[in-house]
Image 1 (tube, rainbow, N blue to C red):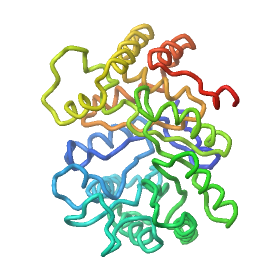
Image 2 (image 1 turned 180 degrees about the horizontal axis):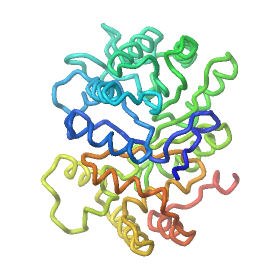
Image 3 (image 1 turned 30 degrees about the vertical axis):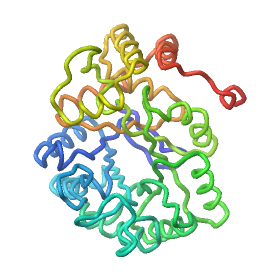
Length: 340
């Protein structure tokens, strides 16, 4: 029986593995995306995460919104909207020929009241739905006061267009600033944060020492992206072996393949074998046993990859296993950790 998890202190409950869809319309076409979502829902999954800019980042010339459109057509075809938790994000530049830099002429990005409302209305149309379960700000907008953003998000909730709000890629102090503003002004508060987090994530030490403490203290759920480090932690890469001829493999080579990360991967493989499971499941199980984690968000280009990840909630690592992975990653409790 599937055990769904609360998102922080909210009443929202999600499957312990979220389905990320940045690859929909990029490395997974619509037919494949439908297969993946069918398999996910068939396994009891209810938590689909996307963003307005997906897959504009794929370098394929589209203007964004493709992932949302595919999800919208799938939900419409399957008639299962009420059983799904659909999360999307806003902040990025949208439209033809828009770069990731700030657009100051058309104001088609950012977290201003104007863009928060406009981009949400656009997402609702692409998703073919009357409401968004979890609307997240993709990253900080330093040119817009957080009070303006939260006020606009609160209006969307009170209009019934959004159920819950969250953030992504926020530092500890930015998250605290937002929670304080919500408390002071009576705005809706962030119920979740979506950070990059994995055994090899560069921000891991800071996240565990600072942000996770805020989340535990104030009831903010953590739904990390890239929990498998772009596939590096699946075990398909071997030190010294020839890499696959793919854009993802080349990206992993430049950003992940260093001595420390190879040591972490080798320890992960050892732990997986000891538990008679796969590196994918062991890496996700390590996350799921963290008290601050709600549901890691995984991506899949085929159903077999998805099925491997969906087995993670059934894996329980021992304290020795966790300590072995932490030791391999060079993780040490900081002063903040020791004083907590």
